[in-house]
Length: 175
Length: 402
Image (cartoon, rainbow over all chains, first blue to last red; front, side, top):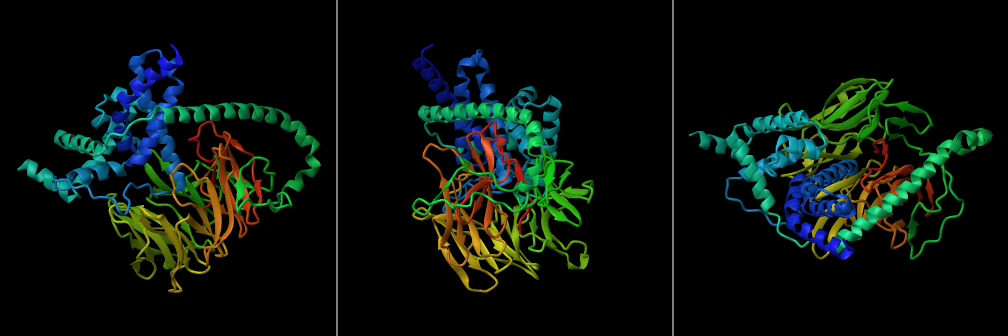
């Protein structure tokens, strides 16, 4: 494969996978700019090993794993820097949703989860991966995935009762 | 949680992700980034080889130089000549930086606590932050399950631990330490100010903005703690006899117990970008000065200076460090990344003394602990540590500074 073919091949793959990956990165980080940067680093690392990836059907999983590893590194660094990362500038527009605040409330819960639990929730409920696939992506055992998911869900269950939009929605559902 | 709840969670994630609009990917930028990663990896491989050689050679060298070992201790000392600034700016680089004395403040590297007097202690874990406390150490630990505050005794054995949700703040004399903890159900935060053994002097208050994060900025005097809530309700507040809001600050970055000053972010506009102020809180003189050229950080131990960095913090590390006069905002010293091609980045700087700053600086595949002197001199306080990847965090954690 010539360098031109190689780049065309890579560019086609990047064009197809960039947006889904960006959305996952956004759910993992909660910040658009950080997500953009994360995705660029993930593609850069994939670019370096592009010729060594023999089984192209495994590319998505490989790329996802790079992304999650990068996010873990970023998270450690951010904690050390003690910076409050926010995408809400003072002039930012307010998102207008017509669901009584449920989406925002659930998103807020996701944002408060520990890093690994958040990754498990995003991969399970957004990417719709199986527990085995999540374990592969995170580099942990299936048992760890189960326990992390279980803790996250239990935590959400307890918070649902404290949060008016969510408990209201639940009561409406039960009626 | 029922499957209905799980469906709602999945729906919420899908809706949130749907807010991300399409933007074109740039192959050129990805290639540039890949080249940078490849270059750093090569440098690290070279550096690792050098470290191996040094490790082998060291025993012999140590025997040969045993008689001069004492010369390396004592106060920091770099080259005697201060460099000439270019346009008032000194180069920020580890290249050709001489070795000076070891850090004069306590720090953690790996699981070892290095004290300013040269002694060391083995810690049970590598902590996120730590400070001397009741003859031992109070540390914060980040685990997969969340954050914990841990009290270590004099022998570094763990005495107790509990959930917490903030960083630590310590008063100038070290007698008061503050932190925030979760309520029973994780929905409220409580601020604790501990007075090193005298419970009657302790202060406790519920943090305003329950459910939000809490960042402790520092003490204004032993009875005044500046803290910040963030999340749905972001406010800078002062806890003293009561609990009041500091109006006009988006966030706070540093406090000085010497003169009652607070540094912080005051505004963001598209025209000026991020603008910071130094405010006289206890003297009621309001904002002393304002800058849109730098971000501001912590004050020097004597309150005369304030640390500064680039106006826009990208979260990836800084390309410059400055020290400004706390009263006027005048630039006292300014260091900038040397060379257009340098990829060096500075992590969070700390005050080592009233005239020196310690700055972890990643350059050419290694972390360097640079000592920046207010006369412009740059030296290295410790041996560099290989950074196998651009994401390798700085290996040094300094004890919490007032």
